[in-house]
Length: 435
Ligand code: CA
Image (cartoon, rainbow, N blue to C red; front, side):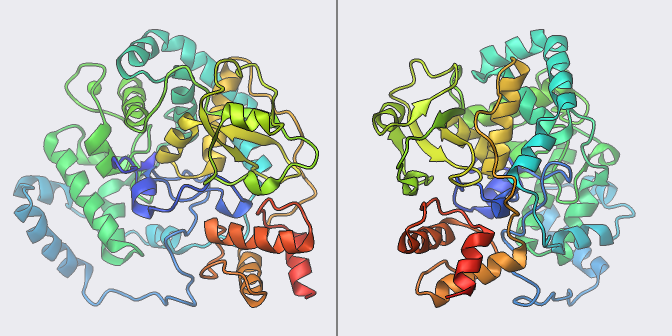
């Protein structure tokens, strides 16, 4: 996780502070997480908090990096960081141009959600996760007992975040965050993370040379951002250090602690596959609409998986990751807990399905609309501008399909008499172009 949610795990969650997006549109796939930072193979950092270059020209810092560092040093010392810690952490640190490149990139094209899921739930990852669940069975049992978080989603998150500790990022966290604090798009956020990183070094959990992570400062096997680390990392192997880089036990327990704080409910699924009846009103597939599982069933929603028993009183929303033509899911409280780790419904669905796959489940019912090509970023902007021209209010045309844009899409779909799933498609954009 890179963004800490309210608790502060990860960047993604808190920092971005975006509304929970339950309908994963292609455009939404990976937002910057709250507790953690996105890995390249798992997700592309969505420029969620960013504006386009055209709207916000890059402003170069008015002072040199050295001058910035000296000013930051004074602030850090005033906040309780000791001189030795600061100077050791910053020895030889210069800005990292690759971090700035990554920070300013706004990918034009997005993978369809089915391709994202296929990458996330690869046969290799399933086998590796199963093997590691056996290897760490004792530790996982102890973690389940202490934190009340099931082992399957924990190991799934471990696989999603760092490929089970194999890819944690190889950048100096201090250097990356210093670069972002100096000239990134969100300097205040990076500033806070950098201070938190110095606190971690001062606490002695890791040495500066071992404090490695992603370009965005997501660290270790859990990809925690520093503030999330400070609030939720735990020493579970008992060596006195919270070492999410080198200790699988510490990493898994830290992730469990975060999910516990996010409201995890042991033994409950995160998502249930469902089939929708003929004539279903797809406008109900909205993250803001919650009903009990039993109420959904009363509207004709059919639970098709093996985990449906005893859940009729649980609160759920309907998720259509690829619109009405694709698979449908009821997502429960644990899905929302995963979103606090990484605020992307595609991510949360991948964690849920991967965890089920470890136990032999997680097979999808229904098929993806593979003939759909996700809208590019510029097409999403055009869609938003066209909806505005048509009298709807999709919000700022930023290429991000959020709640306002989905609402506007639904309105236009209803005017056309189409299924109002709020999902952006080429067909919808074409219809707007021909108005
Ligand atoms: Ca430890």
